[in-house]
Length: 385
Ligand SMILES: *[C@@H]1O[C@H](CO)[C@@H](O)[C@H](O)[C@H]1NC(C)=O
Ligand SMILES: *[C@@H]1O[C@H](CO)[C@@H](O)[C@H](O)[C@H]1NC(C)=O
Ligand SMILES: *[C@@H]1O[C@H](CO)[C@@H](O)[C@H](O)[C@H]1NC(C)=O
Ligand SMILES: *[C@@H]1O[C@H](CO)[C@@H](O)[C@H](O)[C@H]1NC(C)=O
Image 1 (cartoon, protein in one colour):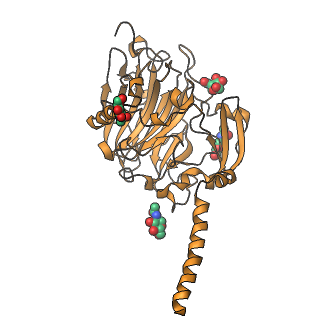
Image 2 (cartoon, protein in one colour; image 1 turned 90 degrees about the vertical axis):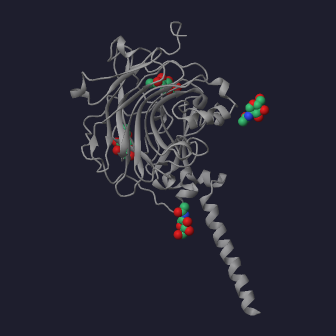
Image 3 (cartoon, helix red, strand yellow; image 1 turned 45 degrees about the vertical axis):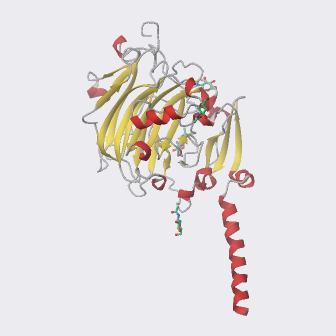
């Protein structure tokens, strides 16, 4: 009898102990307040919260509870040229209003305009039958979406990442339209499709404006229920104290003027297996390997290109004159299984509506700019409708 009481006593102590542990890990309001040590007001429209790096919301993701944070990548692909980055100065608009202290990370607070039902809607109807099916089944806001056009190149193989120097523009977009310029690595397909996507976009539904912003995206089930942009859901572990996701840079290219481009890359770390995201050679953070089903190993395809329902890139066709007129990707590269940087081989090109948009491989400038292409077009116009 007394043995039995002893056991009860122990259970009670154990329960209290476990409960306390759990409260620490949850994003209760109290925990959030403890996590944010500074708030920066950016003009009238935006707010940046500086989170203690070890208390960032992503660490509450159930798959990441046993992970320790990796603060810097342990490896770079062999052949990385840090002296060959883009012309973009790596500064963001919010930095004019303040900075996050060491040991904290800047997280953009989501504004009122943000519409969560559109989170998983940006993706390639037409690229796979499965995604077509998904799109036609959910009719909540589909009427606001015109056909999703894209001009992309892609390769298959086994990759530990991909990179490209991407030209930055501020294309015109109408209400409810988006414009995306990105690198994407993938593994598997349909409902097992895992992707990591990095680049710039203009997306009013998320930000309430038409700024050109740095973004990342992920999914592990073909855009069905997992994944999101930036830090709108838990997953990405942010490490940079000065570059924030979803914010704009201080420069973009101008027609017939200065061209701004930035090197974006996704690379699988040698020791941890995490997928690190870099901009201009600066590590921003990583998608933990444990988040993924298929991408816990290598990627099986890489894609570079544009997705939009409206004006693409600069709004001008590649045939109108190339550099300074249409948009480009150059130094398009993959990181192979041995972590060597390689030009893409057996590249497949896909353009959904060549009358509206086109893509031309840039063979002229190969020696100076590496593998690359021009793309662009005015989108829906009188001539083509
Ligand atoms: C974390 O570790 C515990 C104890 O080793 C284990 O039971 C649990 O499955 C782990 N969780 C994850 C998500 O790996
Ligand atoms: C689609 O629209 C119909 C009619 O408006 C509605 O009854 C149905 O519930 C909607 N389905 C979804 C998945 O939203
Ligand atoms: C941003 O932070 C990184 C370290 O996190 C540092 O190496 C880099 O110089 C910083 N850049 C700027 C513009 O402050
Ligand atoms: C970045 O955003 C701010 C605030 O909306 C804006 O004033 C600025 O022009 C933007 N910068 C660029 C390069 O678009």
